[in-house]
Length: 281
Length: 283
Image (cartoon, rainbow over the protein chains, first blue to last red):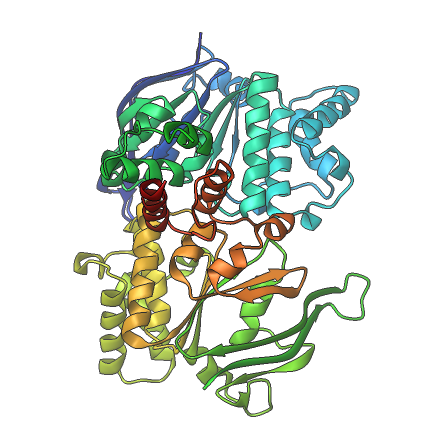
C-alpha cells in the first residue's frame, strides 16, 4: 500500500507586491504523480531550484497543492481535520541541525514531539529511550545539544521525529552541513530506521554516494519527475545526470571512464566491490 | 609578503567555568598566492582560525602578522585589513539585504569611501568574475537561484579587491554542478589575480581536486599541514578525527589489495582511470 501518493500535483509560488496584487507566478512542482510504498527507501535528487524541496514539503502538509492531491497514508493533506494525523505519519528533518533542536538537554528535546501529541508521561520516556537508541545517541541523553557535533545533533533531530512514531520520515538535505563522519553517522542511522524499524524514508540529497542503497530514486527537473528507477538504472545515465546538473558517485564515474576507454565494464557500478568484480581481480 | 601566525592561542570565555580553548599554539606561514584547503571536523577550530585572519577575533596570546605588521597592534587599521582579507561566511546569501543585486555588491566598496564610479566599476567587475548573467544584476537577490545567490554574495567580497579570499563552506547545499561552477570560478580567479585562497570544506573530493596545500585542524591544533597526497596518506588518522580521504583513494586501496599494481595516493577520477589502464596494460 502507498504511504504517500501524489496525483497531478501542481504547486505555484505566487509573488505579490505591497498591495497584494499578483506580480508573478513560479510553478515549482508541475504535474507530479508518484507513489511511495510503505517501507521503501526513496531518494529524491535534483539541482537547486528543481522543485524537490517544494515537493517534499507537501508530504507533511507544510505546503498544500495548488492543484491535484497529496495523500499521506490515505489522508488528503488538505483536510484540516487530518492535519495533525498527517504530520504525525510523516515527520520531517531539515538541513541545519541548529534550527531544529529546542530542548536544553537531549532527552527533553526528543520528548517534545510526543508530549505535544498528548502521549502519557511514562510512554514518552519509553519512546525517548527507544528513539535515541535507534539513532545511537542514547548515551548522550543527558547532554546539552550545544555540546554535540553536527552529525550527533542531526541524529537527535531524527530521534525527535521518530519519537512521534511516524510511518514515514522525510529528510531534506540532512547532511549538507556535516563533516564526513557526521554524514556517515546520519546515513547509517537513517538506513537502520528503514531496515530495522521499517520506517519509510524519503531522502533528499546532493551527495550521490548516499543513495546507492535506495529502493527507488526520483530525479526532479523543472518541477517534474525527469527520471525514476533504481540507483543502478539512474546512475547508468552519466551524461543525462550531468545535463541535469547532477553527478554520480566517484566509483561509478571511474567505471564509466574505464568503459569509455574500451574496457568491458557495465554501466551503473555502485560500489568498489562491484568494480573489483568487473575488472576480474 | 604573507600571513604569519606565531604561537596563536584562543580561549573563549577565559577565566570562567565555560572557558574553552579553540586554538592551541598555531604556527603557520601562508605565502601569497597559495590555494589552501582547511579541513577538520565540526568544532575543531577552523572557523575560529579564519576569523583571526581578518581580525574578527583577536588571539588570547600570540600574534598574527599581515605583510609584516601585527594586525592586533594598536593603531593598525582593521578596516584596511578587512578589505585585504575577505571572508565569505557559510550561507553568505543570508546576508544579502539590498533591493537589487548590483546595489548589494556596491555596499562593501562604498563603505571603503571610494567614489561612485570606482564603486560601480568594482561591483560590475566582481559580478562578472563570479559569472553571474547580466540580467540578474537588477533583480532582487531573492529572485535568484541558490547557486546564483551564493555567487552574488561572493561578488560582494570580491568587490573589495581582497588579496586573500577565505571561503567557509562555499558549496554547502549546492547541487553538484553548482559546486563545480563555484570552485572552478574561484580557481580561475586565483590564476588571474594571484590572490591567496583559503577554502574551508567538508568535501575531501573538492579539497583534493583544487588545493596545493591542506591544513588539518583537530581539537584546536594543526594536525597535518602538507600537500594533499601526503595528507591523505594518513587516511586512518583522518578517519579517527571525523574526516576521510576522497572516495577514489579508497577505491584504489581496494584495487591494490586485490593485486592490481596501482598507486594508492591517487585523489582524482582521471588519475585513477589512467593508473588502472596502465596497470592492466602491464599486467
